[in-house]
Length: 405
Image (cartoon, rainbow, N blue to C red; front, side):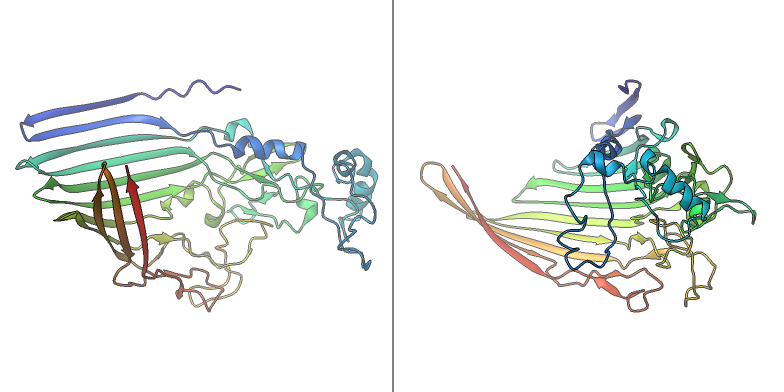
């Protein structure tokens, strides 16, 4: 239905202490847009039937997988284990405790729309307060504290066709491979996007600005920040109805409020310097230097130790690694990538022609000092990658021109 109750109250103020200093701030609620896949993925099963056909050994299988004409959409629906036409075959398979290959097609529902209690429009409460002071006629400094509190945020649970048990005092899923324990045994992998995540961002943001005068300008920014997040309680299927949140605490690698910790991409320090120098006669030099502390990354064991069937954080260790024993959980987002350090430079020559026509010849170089700016592998079970470079940056250049008239 039309979602018309997303009220966004906001309030801001500015107070001038003197002719060169101002204190300003504000707070308010902001809603995100409703993302298209929430609608499209839910409608997809009504128009698309995905069939998996096992190779039966025929020489022409690749060209003729159905051993005849491809079925129509309506004919394809009758092949699913959930179809009335397959009720007897599926009941017999169930009676054999699902031994052997499925006699029908296990329909995966793609990404189902979540039940209403887990379908929300993401929103944040944002607040800031700070000051700005001007020096001379062209320079200013500013500092602001910034806070953002996110709720009803999107996260993807790749498989809700699972049941959970609390026998050991902490909830874990029953393996997806045990079809007799699945809430929807006539279905395959069923993904869902509940909007139950949350986050918090705190930052001190500072800036220096020198506006263009005497043929040059410059700026610098620095931020000291922290980002935290958690996914919502995982969902589990309920036979005959829609999924619900697991009604007891679950293992830390399976999600839930206990997963509140530093978020992916959390970066403690970030600084950027930039400047432009009008040398003269249409020649201009500009540049930017970026330095950033290493971002947090999601380290993982690298295998489906929980038997989720699809997705998950893959942090449950199946075998011992140098980082921990089998049966333990890889800490969440404790891997810090290397710092990033990059300098970009641009030179530009303007050539003026009659009738207000001009040509700008431009040359740019990126990562001038060829710093590696590495990204390290975070999968423990891959001994060739863990803690070793898997990506980096190289020095590059480009040339171009601009015609104005």
